[in-house]
Image (cartoon, rainbow, N blue to C red; front, side, top):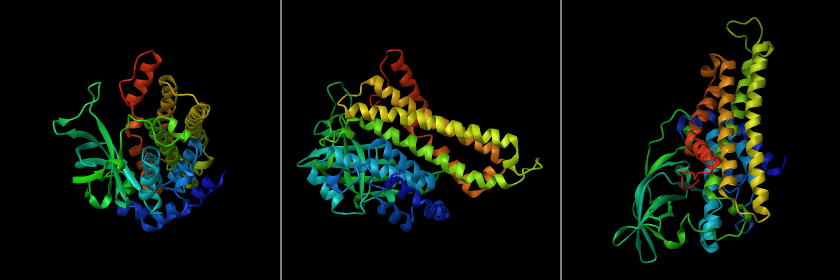
Length: 382
C-alpha cells in the first residue's frame, strides 16, 4: 500500500467518529476538513508545479475509495474538489492556477454543470447570472465552477453544429447566493445545495471551453474529461460498499430472530457474504482493469477513440451495479439491523443516493450498446 492510500486509510477512525455530526449538520465539520486538507485530499490530481501529488488515475481511484470507505460524504467532497481542481490545473493559464490555488493552501473548488446560467460577453470577461444544482462541497468551497451558455449582444451563441456555445466559469464562493436544497436520505454531509450568481463579473482567463484542448501537457488530461469524472464516481460507490461491509461485520455476532446460532455461524450468512464479496470485487476488478488499460494507452501516445471510451464507460457502470448488488446481499444478511443499526443504515443510504448520479445511469449503458453495434452515442459528452 503506498503512502497516499495509507494516509487516507488512517483517517477512517476520525471520519467514523464524526459520522453522526456529519449526518446531523449536513456539513463536513472543521476536524474532518482539516484532516482532508492535511493529506491534500482536495488536490489529489494537482500537478507538482502547483505543489500537488499528481496521482495517476488508478492510484487516485484507490485513495478515493478509501476516503469513501471511511465516510461517503467526505470522500464525495474530496472527489468533487479534486476533479474541480484538476479542471483548473488542466485548462487555465499557470499564473491563474497559482492565483486561485497555490496562494491558499486550504482552497477548494466545487464544480457543477447542472443548472441554467448565462455568460454575457463584456470587456475582459463575462457577466454571469444563473442558478445551479448539485454543488457538492459548496459550503466549504472558496471557488465555484459552473457551466453557462455564452451570450453576445444578439443573444445566445451557437457552435458551428448548432449546439449552444458553453463555457465553464470560476467565481468566488463569496459572490454566490446559496439555497439550502439538499435534504436527501444519503450523502447528507456533502451539502450539495443550489447556488445562484447575479451579474457577477468573471475574467476570461478564469473560464474555459470544454471543447478546447487542455493547456497543461500532463498525459492525465489525455483521458477525456467527462470520462475522468465518471471513473471517480464508480470508485466512490465501491468504497461506500466496502464501508457497508465494515458496518455489517459487527452485526454478524448477533443471533438472528429465527436462528439458533450467531449470524456468522449460519451457512446462509456465509454463502451470502461470499457472494456479496464476489459481486463487489468483480466490479472493482473490471473497473481497474479498464482504467489501467486506458492509462497505459494514453501514456504511449494513443488517442482514445469512441470504442476505447465505451469499454471504460461500461466498466464504470458495471462496477456501480456490482456495488449495489453487493449492498443488497448485505441488507438481506443484516435483516432488521439493516435499518436499525445507524452505521449500516447510513452506509446503505449513502450508496443508494450516489448510484443515481448521471454518470452511472442506464442511459450510459445504452450508449455503450450503441457503440458496440456501430452507432454513435446519443450523449455528445460520451
